[in-house]
Length: 337
Image (cartoon, rainbow, N blue to C red; front, side, top):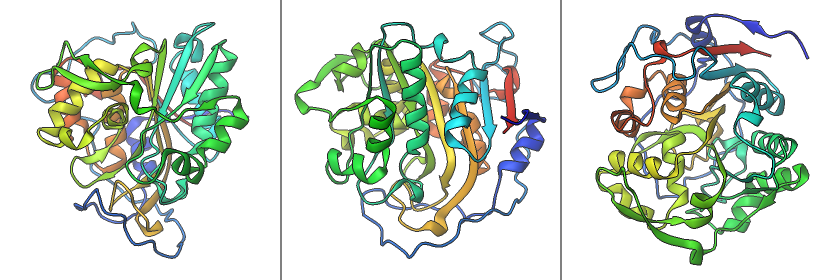
C-alpha cells in the first residue's frame, strides 16, 4: 500500500470538494424519473473555509479531546473503498477498540429503496459495508448482521439492488430482514420531545452497532448523515417528521452506535433521498469515521459546503450532549491513499 499522504484540514476540504449540481429542496417520498447514466464530475472547485468556524451556543469551542490526545475522527480520500474503510477505522483505534471477541454486531447501512444501485448515491457503498463485516469478524465477532428498513420496495429487493447483499454474504456476514414483530416500544430516557418509540429490539440489544450512512441531500432535513440514518431502526417514521430535527436527535440518544462510518464516496448533491440521476452525484471519494456521531456528521457536512450547525438534527444532538460539532477542538487525522 502506498505511504499515506498527510495534509491540513483546509487543503483536505478544498481537495475533496468537486463540482456537482447545486443543493435545492426536493420531495422525499416520490420515486424520481431515472435518467440515462452520465459521467461523474471530477473537477475540483473551492468551498467556503470552515476551518475557523466555531460551534453554536451550547457546545464549547474549547472542549478537551475526550480521548486524551488520540485520534477522535479520521477522514480518508482515495479510490479503493474497501482499503479506505480499513484505514479510516484503523486511524480511530482499530476495529478491536469497538468489537470484542464474541460480540454480537449489527451494521446499519442506508438501503432506503430498491429503485437503483449504489452508483446513484442513495444507498451505502457495498464495499464499505463488506469491509466492516470482515473487520468485525477478524476481531472475533460471533455474528455480524446487516440490516435496514427500506421505505421503497421490499427489503429483499432493496438488499439485492443495492449490491450490499452480495458483498455482505461474500464477506461472511448475514443480511437480516427486519421482522415487524421485533419492533417494540422502548423508553427514550434522554429524549427531549420523544419519550418512547418502537425500535427494532435486536439493534438495542446488540453488543455493537456500527452506523454506516451514505452522505446525501435530503429534501426535508437538508442532508442525510449518521443521525438521520438511525430512522431506519424504528417503525412509523412518518410520525417523526413533526419536529423532525429534535426527534432524530432523541432517537440517536437511544441507539448510540459505537462507531459511525460515513460513506462520502458518491455524494448525492440534490434530489435526495432517492436520487435517480447521475448528474446529481459527485465523486467526493471520502470516508469518515468516529465514535462521535455528531462530530462525524459535522465533518461530513463540509462535503456539501456546510457545517454541523447548518443541519438541525446535528445541532439538536450536540445541544443534548451527544457529541461535538466543534471540529477545531478534537484531534482529526486526514490522509489520502
